[in-house]
Length: 499
Image (cartoon, rainbow, N blue to C red; front, side, top):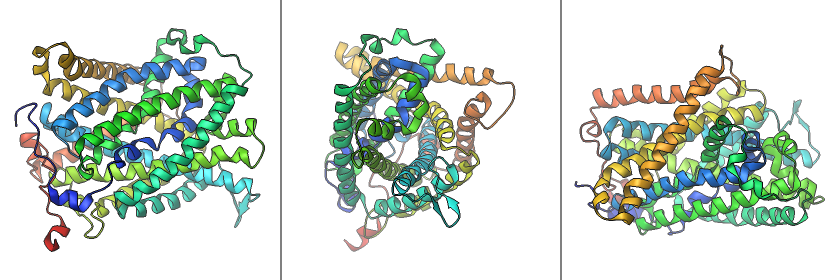
């Protein structure tokens, strides 16, 4: 298929089985904003200080380039495998497979620690109700072990919802989204107006950040904070028009930018930098306690809990669908392609994703404090996110390189902006990898040990090479010959036999 030629659109069978409202694209991408604010503001302040709003604005520029790349590629070739399919066809099978693999594993790790966050938030509510001990166990929200047990119950609940189909999941997403955004906007506006810390235009000056290393680390962390808008592109085969996925992803990204910058300024109007860093992932609930008496002070905590549940759901849905795209190419086993005859969702794959996330969450119990576990996961996944975003943008620049001769506007949108965005993310990732490799002289499982920070991304990429080798030489996947993923209707759906 020639570059720029529209791919065959998703087949009517898949649309009949998986058809949902157009709004799923926006809902799938928007639900993690409150979680990002809840756990991200304190972490960003560690590196950017009072320049956190500036850091978010700077990080948005390459992310916007990535989003435009996704939108352009999606209009040409809508596919729930997105980067896996696009990179494979434009650059090569091995980079494409690694893109799909690191997305899958990064989401599994994300769901593992988000489960623990969800459990921690639930335990905070339980503590507020006066229950601090049950069956001899301290219900400590700061304990990774107890939080993980509670969070795994939440993970099972959202998986059941995801299995029953994207339509029901979308309704739940919109309900959670409306509540959490309302609470967040009310409290951030309150903080902005009532704060005692004087606003400074220096907060918007990225050059005031202490060092280039702090800037680079902060930018990768900010990229992670924005992560999630691309979930819309994994359900484009389940929307009435593939352009809805592109529009939904871009709208969600712009909404996240506005909300994150607004929240960062609002937080800094109430909290000093040391105070913000000390609170870490509890910064949002701490803000609520400083502004309002009970029971109103618990509303931000409720919003954070809704966002955590929604983040789990909006992660398991696209991850299972990405694995479906890989399974139908035989780069993963055919087990991943089993579609529920009633709900039309990749039910087996969804359950497998849940099981793997639960296993990772149990392994993470070895990091005793949830704050340290979150910091470890965020720093490691940030490098992986930069890698696969960069590869996808590079695929866009390669595929549409003919646009360089079509005029300034097409060249900017199709080649120059995606190419520059890819280079920025590769540069940041490479710089931080070098810093991690040289900052420590011994290995220790802590978030400030460089070798440990590199171990997790290295294991993800290394395991991808092993799985890819099995797919190429044992399963003899045609993907490794052509680099092309299958079209959306290439998989036989159980429902088709009775339709």
